[in-house]
Image (cartoon, rainbow, N blue to C red; front, side):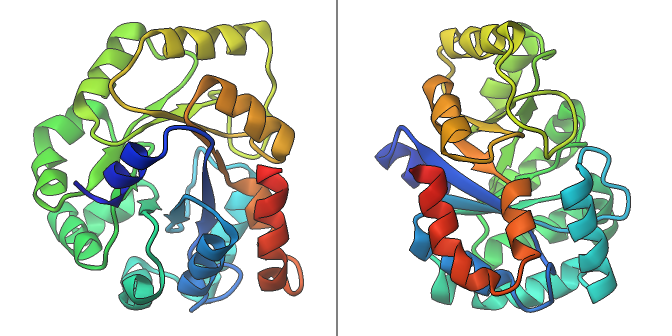
Amino acid sequence: MNRLNQLFAAKKDNLLSIYYTAGYPALNTTVNIAEALEKAGADFLEIGFPYSDPVADGPTIQHSSEQALENGMTLNKLFEELTELRKRVTIPILLMGYVNPIVQYGVERFCKKASELGVDGIIVPDLPMYEYEALYSAHFINNNLSNIFLVTPQTSPERIRKIDELSNSFIYLLSSSSITGGNLQLTHNIEDYYKRVKAMNLNNPAIIGFGIADNATFKKACEYANGAIVGSKFVKLLGEENYMEKIPAFVKGIRG
């Protein structure tokens, strides 16, 4: 049982996760930001590692990735920064990024290093489920890392059941199949999708991401799932002056 499992066993509702990009707005800020978010009341965090071709990211996160790469952020640099992580941060931490840098680094090596540094899970949006199951699942399991799968409004019930079967912490429920950074739009189709997934009574909790930007959208997402993820809105904050001082009020504003 890793920290994610412990969190979901202890807290069932209104879970708040924050996403940000490692290396943005500057190098050597990753753990400082994580520590500040924990103190402000975030339940768990997603730290993105930048990639040059982020197909699912909207302009805000794309910009943060470009800036992070210009700043010199790499997987090796991220792992170097994370050596201080568990001396200062206790909440669950996930790494999120695209499969290409992980494969280049070596999947087994990546999982081993992440686990050694206290990472609890990995989110890889473009890793096909069959590849994970056939080629990589043992590396995740052997290193006590949760692999987080994504579900969209177009995902079939059969695939959702399969994802639930392969998951061991939570399922990332996308509010749409578009890029990050839009506002949560609760059309009848989207509400039906949330209700349909909720009615499946999955074994794993569901966390909603994409479009969560304020207390209203956070509360609405929590009506249908166990919690929600804020990404682009927080990354925008990191582009402001004195952003560290603004983190407590930001988290309080989301939680209401």
